[in-house]
Length: 368
Image (cartoon, rainbow, N blue to C red; front, top):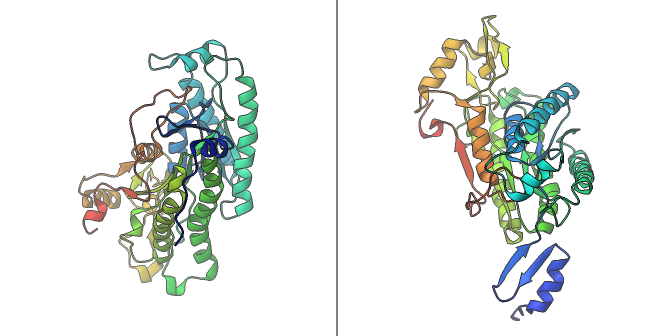
């Protein structure tokens, strides 16, 4: 077997410059050129958990693109993100010199936009990243001349795949379409996100991708075979992608929520008062017989008493919040370091890849 020959420092400098890196022979470490702002893409980020993640990143100073098929959801998400960006783009004691200079110079906040996308289509997902890059390029031109904002084109450093539908029902009696849609909207969509984001992050030799899984992957209920398979597949996808992309400095992880109550409301099927809708589609069986009406529902379809029983069954005795899940995702995307970020520093999750972070209040630690 032939021994591989380590390239010289000069050869490595030549090779890595094409990727925006400088080699420091004395220190034996790679140092990336300073960039203007960090960018994050959230596929399926116009409602629920995805929107909570996007808002949290915007408030931290990221340029953010969200994507979905729904025109109305995109419009609502744009309003929410622009409001979050404006409220965060104010002088703060936590600001670094470049951020303070940018605000003082009248530079607008990092861009936010909502892009049409069918997450099951590879072409559509790739188009989201291309559209986002074009918008970031426009912002980069406007930022020229601001002290401290130098370096490469606004780099993609974070990507989150939040798309997915439940498609609940007994697998043996389900038709082809709901099964294919359930698998495609979660697993297939995530694969396209890893491809599109991973290629761009490889060039910068750093980045983090988070796939939104579910506690149902490890503890599925009856009627969740396709959904649990899709979410379990994300964990395999993350581990395999982490092994492939790790040498390029790109990390891939899964965040798996359990029962989550969010701000949106729906009326329960029984006609009782509206109840908060769960962003994650981890479902439970209602008190009625399944065979009497195939009555499997998300938390949105449960009465308040039924929701209370679900909450009491978790070790923490309550439902989770969308912001708690968003905080876990932000942690997996860390560390954040950029001149326009509101806060940065600390190792964060820099040494975590190929893992699943479960945010379920202890649900998977007990039987429900």
